[in-house]
Structure formats: C-alpha cells, structure tokens
Length: 296
Image (spheres, rainbow, N blue to C red):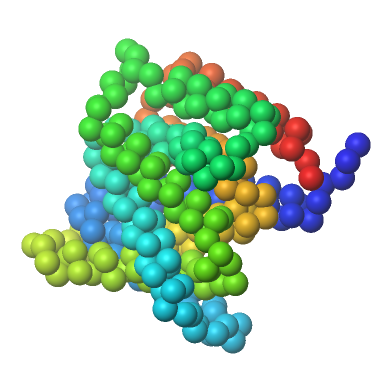
C-alpha cells in the first residue's frame, strides 16, 4: 500500500478545514442579519477585522508586504472574486435556508472541473466520479418537499457565489505571478481588497454602518465571522490548492454543506429531511473514494 506524500498529508487536512470553517458562515452571520444589520456592514467589519488580525500576525512574523505591480493586479482580481462570492451567499440567506444556500455553493467543484478542462487539465476518472457523486448529493439535498420550498432567487444567488468561488480557486492554483506569495500574505491582500470594496459601497449608498450592531455581544459574532470562515478558511484553501490541486481541494469542500446544514438544523431549527441525510451520505462516500484512489 502506497504511503501518502507530504503534499497529500498537508493538502487533504487543509481542504477539510476549509470546508468546515466556511460552513460556519450561517452560525455567525444569521444572528447579525436577524438583528437588523445590513449585509454590507456585516461584510465590511468581517473583512476589516480579518485584515487587522492577519496584519498583526504578519508583522509579528516579520513578513515582507512588498508585491510587484503585476501581482497587485492578480490580487485585486482575487479580492473582487472573494468579495462577490460573500455578497451573493449572504444575499441568498434572505431567500432560502442558510444550510441549503451554503450547500448550493458546493456546486463549485463541478464548475472548477469544467473550467480546468478548458485549461487543458483533465481530472482523472476517480475525481470525475467523485464530482458526479457530490453533485448528485447536493442536488438531492436541495430538493423541495413538504417541509421546505426552494426560492429560485436564492438558488441563483448561491450558484453565482459558486461560480466566482470556482474562479478564485483556479487563479490561486494556476497563476504563476503570485506563486511566490505566501498563503498568509495572499489572504491578507484578498481580504484587504474586500474591506475597501465594502467601505466604498457603504459610502456610496444610504446604508447605516452601525445599524443592528449596537449590542456588544453582536461583535463576538463579527470576530467569529472574521476568524473562522474568513481567515482560516481562505488560508487553508490556498494551502490545499497548492498541495493537492484545485479540483481535489474543491471536492474536499464537501464538509462545507455538511457543516452548514448541521448548524442550520441544530442552532436555527431549519428542517432536516431524508433528502438532506441521503445527500450528505453520498457526499461523504464521494470524498472517501477520492482520497482512497488518488494517493500520491
């Protein structure tokens, strides 16, 4: 039996961490939205807190912040993509259950694989089979039944979030221009762009920055949102894509909908149906198969 390579030992756990932490979005975001906070305000503070915490970490580690102008262009695109994904997902929370919205974002492995084919990188058959199984699993999870009805607007917003997330992953994996930028610094700049975007958006709109954020306990949710589904998720995603590739890292994101659905059910009382149970089991089977068949 072949042993796992160093890249696999680092990349697979990083991919799992990415999925679990990104799936925590509803845990921190829904209480803020229910308290009356605007999506723009939530995301601005999420990003600015993330940038400050990560900036301190980089300074303590004596990290050089210097990047070339070519790298600035790529980092700007990455920041805009990550920002767009966040906006679309949070808007989807308004129309469909948070667990299902996050589950729909997990369709991005299919989009990653399709885009990678156009880049002449064709996945092996075990990865294709895993993608197919995860796709079926997510479709089963999101079927309407007597307990819940799917709002098409929420579905399209979630799919839009999945598309830009797929592009974000592929650029990290394929761009040689930013290949020498550390994972932490890449995360810092991507989030920094997001903070600027949301600040400008708030200034140009009639959104009240602190509406719904007056309670001190609310800020614990903002800090949690900044640390788990932002800093940890983005940094571990970069680590995973660089060690095991964009497609495999994407498939490991199966832990994202599993986490989100469990949070929605246990914490917010969202319905859990047989469709959801079957979909989760299919997705777990797909990930297990992929890891077993693609050892390096």
